[in-house]
Length: 233
Image (cartoon, rainbow, N blue to C red; front, side):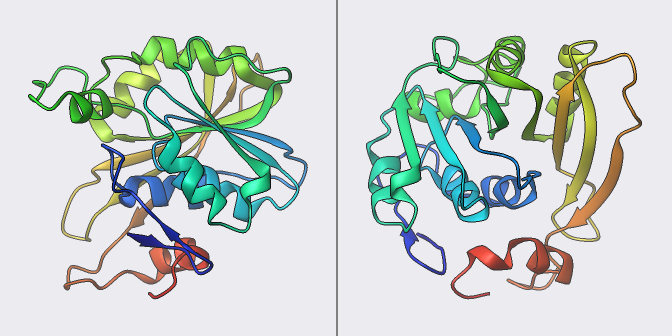
């Protein structure tokens, strides 16, 4: 159970449990004071949607998922932000909204070529079965406001695939490569995009290390990024 300072995230009915990927994305995604509408694609437990609602006190946040969103709704109702967070069970390819979104985030299914497992729920959650990268890209372009941004977390190999899929359509504006410890190579990439344009600037590149290498000991940079969301650290 993931514990916000204000409440706890339940995850007993969700095939994809709360993990570091979701926490990183929810804390790292760029939230601007002017952002009023946000979308979490593949919301699962609703963790990232609720992190965004905590960070943007005037924004409404919508989470969509191909699976049941009852767990996400339950978590939102237990939070201080439930009246600003909405969920819809729907493939994002079919999702329609009355207005575009200022910020879209996703912790998507990402194992493109690896073998699937017998558990259908885990297969759908971890493999690009229901949401291939080109369809995720197209959904973002359809739902994102002209000056909006899209943030995603992916394993480093899949990040390179996704960058290739987005070439000419979405422009990379920020990238943070994530190491689990100083001794390990980066295993995840946090990517932020805007719509591609003629005057795209060079992206901001950085690196983040989660742990020091000692048991349950986090680096100061990871603590600084995520401390607003943990009951105990």
